[in-house]
Amino acid sequence: MPLSPARTRLLVASLLAAGFLGALDHTVVSTSLATIAGELGALEHMSWVVVGYTLASTVLLPVFGKLGDVVGPRAVFHTSLVAFLIASLLCGFATDMTWLVVARMIQGASSAGVQLMSQTIVAKVTTPRERPKYMAVIGAAFPIAILVGPLVGGLITDYWGWPWVFWINVPVGVAALVLALIAVPHIEGGARGRFDVAGAATFSVALVAVVLAVTWFADPAARIAAVGSLVVAVLSLAAFFFVERRAAEPIVPLRLFSDRTIAAGTALSAIIGIGLFSITAYLPTYVQMAYRTTATVSGLVPIATVFGMLVSNLLSGFLASRTGRYRVYPILGTTLGAVGLLVMAVLPGGMPLWVPMVVMAVVGLGTGAFMSLIVAVVQSAAPASDVGAVTASVNIVRQVGSTVTTAIIGGVIGFGVAALLPSAMDAATLTPALVQAASPAVQNVVAGIYRDVFAPVFFALAAVYALGIIAAVLLPQGRLSDEPAGAVETRPAIA
Image (cartoon, rainbow, N blue to C red):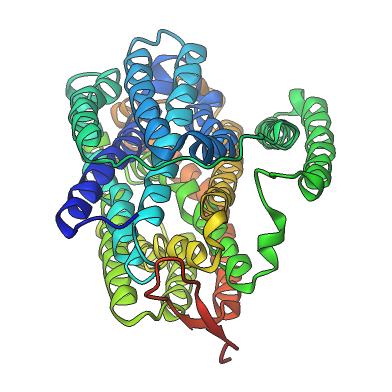
């Protein structure tokens, strides 16, 4: 459904504003995470503030994708936006970790509807050749939110208190909702109304079981429960693939992955979730403890990361739309990501703060080069009737990678720090403010512990990006079509 250039620009602006909400909430929370965990006395459950958000959004991605196909993406988009605002209010009033995690899960679920429908709406009203630049603009919501989110989150935490990191969403969200009601066009839903209940159920059970397994495994007291959850995850995943191969309208159409562009592009999308999104929420905590900074100053490292991400995301999107070529960007991007994370793993103690800022800027520069572009490429390689399904699938693998890896990293940090701390210090109530008020000797001990805990995490993520280089090389060369329902024109890749 083509739109006039002016209407298209207004539409993209409204989708960017709405997408900014979910991204802002994720990044504003990151700088207050250590303070929230300390005040609520639940360091060991700190990861669930992040994991609960991403878990809920991942589980409901295929559901929202199907709903968008049936009733149209506009209705799902607006409903999700309203639900997000209500959940933001609930988060700010939380009095314990359980309340906060439940409210965060509502936020995550509604954020999934906003993000997925934004991409689906763009795919419905643009050609494959135009799509990368519009996807780049919408995808810029996440880097922009990180640029302002950590700094704003740190200031709010230091001067207003952590509940306001959630309540700040309300005025921004109301403005985004008004703009979206005006700008988002009506797009007819499809005639197919059958929903793959079995596929959605088995997928949800598998994902929740995986997250519980990796969250509990580091805790010796919960080791049996972790093994049981892992067994449930394996059985549910097997059942999911069995159901999807036989479903008339599968929530994840596995047949699409026989296409080399879709398969390689999906793998690259997973690399982003595993390799960078998972660590973003913990960077401010790492900087606050290892470099002994305030919450406000700790936001500078993720700011540097996403500044590079923002620049390369926009540049690669506009260049791909201009030339139709796209393969070089993921190859270069995964290489930069692998090198940057490897350097982070070996940085010695006592370095000035600008050093990790520059290194993580390189990681962001590499990631942004294919972050939004790969979604547009995969959409363009799919049949027009499956654009919504393949968009959901690309987002699912990215979210699954981020959700599972975030849980793993959270467990490593929580239990790793607790195991290494001196017996006189209580890990459950350890906050940056307490460390900064301690003696220099204690500060040095805590800083060394956090560097030792994070080093293997950075090594592992560098290895993930190295695998991404392989996926990028396997991505076929091609040019994006100018036809509204066109596909990527591919030819054998040049080694």
